Length: 368
Ligand SMILES: *Cc1c(COP(=O)(O)O)cnc(C)c1O
Image (cartoon, rainbow, N blue to C red; front, side, top):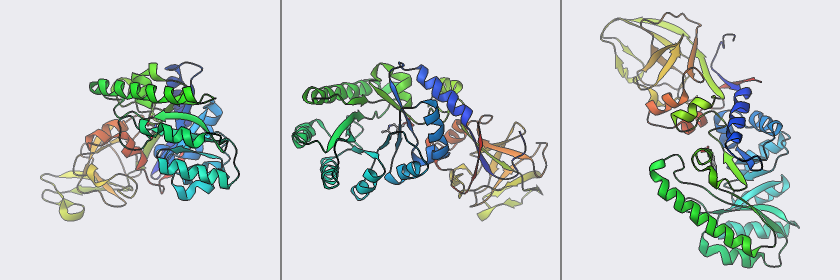
């Protein structure tokens, strides 16, 4: 591969294909697959990822906010798109762009129903979200009668699916809690289905749910992090391939004497002679201050170099003492050769935050 020459996020769509096929292999062939592409497809590029998922035969996409769905429609994406967390102000736009809302409260349900009526819709697809223990968003068992009552004799909207979200699908110490969520969902969803004249889809599992609770796959699964190459556990990380590789370059090398400081507020002071490299990426690119002061490492020619001192807005300095490298050489911040899981966990955070933090000013380069 040629030298990157500047800070870039390489996006490997072949890795996406591998991860998609791997996750599909965990579920039945009839089970539908929803690819979660919120937050710029976990910090990569929602349009490139959505197009690839469409070509791979994914059944559905999901985003968090309406504006993210609008961007996909404007780019020509035809797959059905579930908007997980819409607000009332965007309902007219949603209908105009054929985006399907998650209706998670009585307020949101009623106002969407009214909008569908005002705009003359018939059987507009909506998704009912139930809270089964995450206590974040969702209708409850107590809302079932209200929902069914509001739908009686009304054909403005049609319930395309019933779903819920697990609180701890990656944590097998919480298995009892997860099973109680699954039981709660089974109860709520079968009550509703028994009272409807048609059969909405049901879905419950995210990536770790697919891996740990495939028996609860119902009609569809919703995967995000796994598609991007991370599985929330070492055994799964081995099977998946990171889609994004954040790479940069050595801008300048300095020889530092004993008792010299590096960076703002003199947070690093050397006690011996050493060599440092300055790299053109900082907290404005998504490498936050928590990675500074020897917490995070980058990889240069296969050797790990710790970030020293405070992370600046547009730069970090790394200790390259003993690493054979020159100005202009390539640096891997994370990716296939230097796991984002290791980098994230070094700073006590998670891959989700590391990936989605890569800012829009980082150039994206694609491989397919
Ligand atoms: C983000 C999200 C997902 C994807 O979860 P992963 O752990 O990334 O697979 C699935 N469902 C809902 C409701 C979400 O908000």
